[in-house]
Length: 344
Ligand code: GLA
Image (cartoon, rainbow, N blue to C red; front, side, top):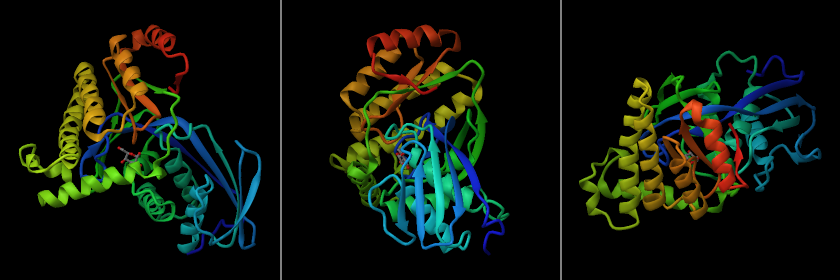
């Protein structure tokens, strides 16, 4: 059914996310714990009746035209165009669209700016359609990221930005996408800090590790790597052994972290974050020396826990801090690392 309001300008705003714990396990059948954050992407679309999509970002101010069926070309507008092509294939919209994108989400920071732009475009294109809910948008966005953009990511980011309200934690079981929305206890402050090191997922390092995880699962004879037991993974050699040890231990940490969140046990949650970082550094090999130092200083200056967040290779860290200490802690950390930036 074509969207009844297809001739007017439609707009949607979608938040970004930080992952508190449960890293690199959303395609391994683990439970993940992302939280939506206030920085957001807003997309406006207006049908233009032509066979071209005209796309501009208020961040760059230039508008570029693309044939409505043109393939991805490793440009930021791919996220919008993939979503428009999907929306046209579902008859949510007709013809080309004039699109304006405005985003306050740092790019290459591990905060899912791409998922936010895709979901915001899909949400604008499907506005007015009663049968398209947040989950449907998330599944569509993952399909676009996997097949149009070419990044074989899991479902965490899309679900987090499509379902999350800023400040609410999504406990998402990635085997069946069942979830619960949980409140962050009042005595917890989550601080997200950009290291200043920017990265892209399209450079192959994400795919290599994901393939290693899938190969480890196949070798062990399990559907999902997180289902393997710690004993059974000894049959693997490096690097599959390392990837498996991370996935199995991170799935257990994530389960423990949900229990700690529910009981308000901040120091336990913080310890689990620290262990998660160690495992991401040693077994997933997705951290960097600068980020290791930042995480180490964040903890030694008084955070309950800190870790790299998102796929890694740079980007942001997330820290858990007692609310009363946040400002002093942040000032001390900034003094040691002058180029870091606080996102929240
Ligand atoms: C990226 C991917 C997600 C997930 C994380 C790592 O953000 O898009 O699907 O795999 O990395 O946890």
